[in-house]
Image 1 (cartoon, rainbow, N blue to C red):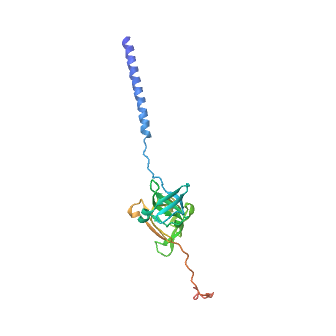
Image 2: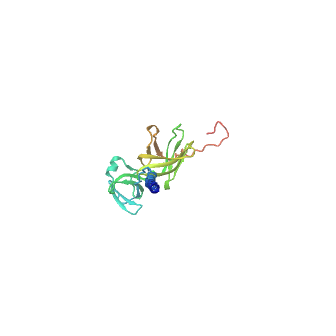
Image 3: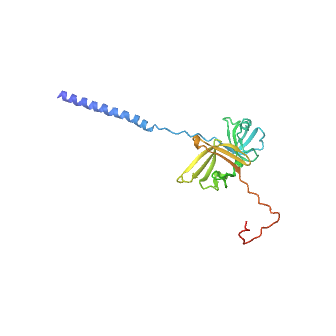
Length: 230
């Protein structure tokens, strides 16, 4: 009888140990489930503001949207060709600065960037096509049906454009471009982050209305003669 009681107690102890052991493994399993990989998205460090009265050849006074006034050296940026669109007092700027906010490493004049930009149609050159960059981050296509531009913004000194391509199932795509040139009549940017065979460079001129032909007071005669029609 004593042996039977001892055997029962032993079995109960083994079961208790097994139960405790299983309980200890559960937190580890939960920890394994919580372990996930996350993608790293760089923070946009663009600073927006107005070009101030204190701006000079090598110094930029920026009146930021946050109410701060920054006095930044632009010597190195100018020498590297990273001041885009010129500096005009009162114009709206997007800049990148060093950590101490003493130097602007990239400057983009948003007033210069706005407008209608065109180039000869790459297919046959018979017409001008391009992009309309509007205030509020709105982008539109000019005489284009294969690409429909939607929005634009500056991200870390680069130009980001959202668009829809014909035949793409109405799926939006976002492309990042490095500015190469920006002036009163010139805009050039190149794709970033794509395979070499997918890289594109866009070279635009600012759209200008074509001058009308001066007939020096002459008027074309309205005629029904098919051979005399112009």
